[in-house]
Length: 223
Ligand SMILES: Cc1cc2nc3c(=O)[nH]c(=O)nc-3n(C[C@H](O)[C@H](O)[C@H](O)COP(=O)(O)OP(=O)(O)OC[C@H]3O[C@@H](n4cnc5c(N)ncnc54)[C@H](O)[C@@H]3O)c2cc1C
Image (cartoon, rainbow, N blue to C red; front, side, top):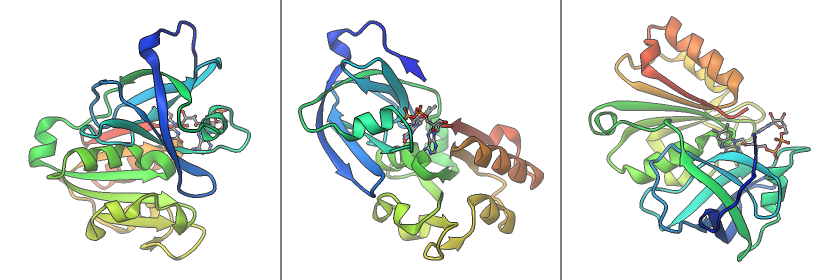
């Protein structure tokens, strides 16, 4: 969580559009202004004249000429509600991109990558898949309802497993951690975990108990 103190003109970005995906989740697209980034990094975002800002993973790809973030409006939240009200032409304040939750070139080229996400924790993985078309990956996405399978049609069918807890319309009924309990992990893969901290802790324990080495596990906790 951050407070914005000194805003410079270079840190201001214009909103292009907001795309509602579910009642609570939306994709906010804004100008890139030539900023570079590596898929998996996050930015710190807030409204121009507001004092609050929060971290958001970049959802768009490295080659897109805009930035996108995927946000879920949090009940009684501050920034996730403020961003949802924005319309084309509004001005955002952004710090970054920053962070080291990224894929080394060797991993992109030679390794199998298992992505494990809950909710909007899918954001950095969408950016990676979009940026590196040659990537050998499997994406496990844990949500409550099947309608929260954000932009599912962008992933190859056989590379995306939707785990749902509140309905049975996903590919697997249960949490992503239940899925991991029932499946033998690939011992040579690199594992990237993103989303809520409890899932990350539980998945870490399950995978290491099943023989995956801690150095094969990479994590980004949202809350
Ligand atoms: C590195 C990083 C990247 C992040 N990337 C994203 C992203 O891509 N998309 C995104 O939507 N969020 C992301 N977050 C979370 C985001 O920074 C905010 O915490 C979130 O938007 C809530 O902010 P708020 O001001 O609306 O609520 P606040 O007033 O800050 O928080 C209200 C409460 O909601 C909890 N909370 C935060 N996020 C969630 C959630 N998703 N579901 C349920 N409870 C939650 C908080 O722990 C807190 O208790 C990221 C966090 C980090 C650290």
